[in-house]
Amino acid sequence: MQGPQAPSYLQLLDPTLERSFRGHKDVVTALAFKPSMTQLASGSIDNSVMVWNFKPQLRAFRFVGHKGPVTSVDFSPSGALLASSSRDKTVRLWTPNVKGDVTVFKAHTSAVRCVQFSHDGGSLLTTSDDKTIKLWSTYRTKFQHSLSGHLNWVRTARWSPDSRMLVSGSDDKTVKLWDIGTKSCVKTYWDHTGMVSSVAFHPGGTVVASASMDRSIKLFDIRTHRLIQHYGDAHGHAQREHGSGAGVHSIAFGGPGGEWLISTGWDGVVKIWDVKEGHLFYTLHGHKNGPTTAATFSPRGDYFATGGSDSQVMVWKSNFDDVTRMVEDDMRATEEAANPVRRPPHAHSAHTIHTDPALARPLSTMPRPALPPKSASGGLATHRADPSQSAPALSAKQHPPPHPGIIDVGTSIFAEQDLPDMADADAPVAPTSNGIPRKSPDSRSNRKQAFSAPLEVRAIPEELANTLQHIVRQVDVLTQTMSILESRLTMNEDRVVDMTLRFGDAVERIEWMTSRVAESRNRSDGTGDVRSGKASPLPPQARKVFSAEVET
Image 1 (cartoon, one colour):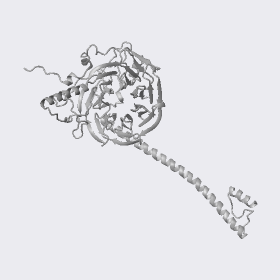
Image 2 (cartoon, helix red, strand yellow):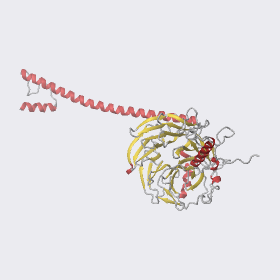
Image 3 (tube, helix red, strand yellow):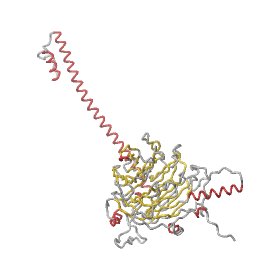
Image 4 (cartoon, one colour):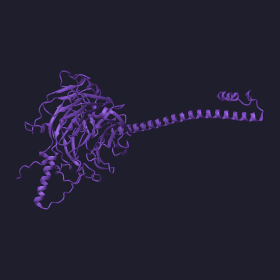
């Protein structure tokens, strides 16, 4: 009789929930770690920016001032500034402390979707629904130049590690690679069939990743411009109380060498992908009541944060490096015991379910940990990490302490108790199974519980969405064509007017010269009466000049 099977490394070292922050009143849309790992910033549809301090004795800061949902947040490389973008068309630069000094500037003529500091901190990029990408100088927020080329909303953009290039994604279903030096687009990738919701630059600087509402994640080699990895159904459909939909919301690279990719989506889970081997590594079920909307790794990759429709911000310890180190040590010890002569490591084949074998190429040949056991259906058995399950496993010293509170910084646009009213006005009511709206447990307001659709995902049939997007593109093309024709007609009209004036002057001069020649001939022949002016009519100006000459 066999004894109980020993737990694997992956089971022993699952990601563990370290902290859980509550303070937002609506969907969390953006997350960013401070480089010093002392703070975490988050943005939300509730128009606020929260800065969470990791020291238990310090309170969180709520920065208010935006008049629309916050779409993106990012710390400067030094950590001295925190940038936030909003659908109110502005970008704000905050000092992440209790003073909350802020610089505000109107960045675009429409909603601003993304903001990010360059890696040297000298520049700032913004993307917008006005279909442009703009670059700004961080010092005095001076506008530098604009990048145009997308035919629809530009939802996302990211700098390359050397800040010489950037990658962008748009609702026109394209991913564009830009050269900052020449201010031009060097490559357009047309591989997605849905709007591009998120892009990321690999720390190595040679690979870009893109996520789309077509449920896929794709990795491109920017040297050869080839698709090297494809995850066709990264985040599938979800049928929930708040609505139905499908697609990937956000992606981000993590780890010292960028070996991990984290993604969030409509299905309400967080997924970790091993991009070196090309397979799904972990699936986390931590957030409740809707899609997961934001995720990011810490600078060293040892922690990652997630946010979702439940208005929570969760900080996890990854433990991925511990898994890799333990498995590699075990493999090395086994190999040395079997054969004293070391053999060169070989690369594992890419997982056939999550990666197209014809396209996937591992980014490294370093051995990775053994894969989890396969499920009965043949797919990869994923690990479920739930806060309710992982929290009791922590020791007393590891339990997340209660947060001391939140400090409101800046002039409040609305009172805290007014936030549910905004939710009722902007979001549908979550129905129960019998169709009757569910009442909020808050006895003070006793209002309907509401949810806002994250990232403005359109809950419409895919065929209709594709048709509408095609119509929008055609209208954009027609609009641009009409603008070009109008500008050319204006130029031609100006040229005609100018030529008419010049022609009139030339005719007048010719007539004047002709009259002068005729008068000279008459004077020499003695047949004309010059003083009486009967030889030929002269223009007024020529007549004055000629009279002066005659008197002389």
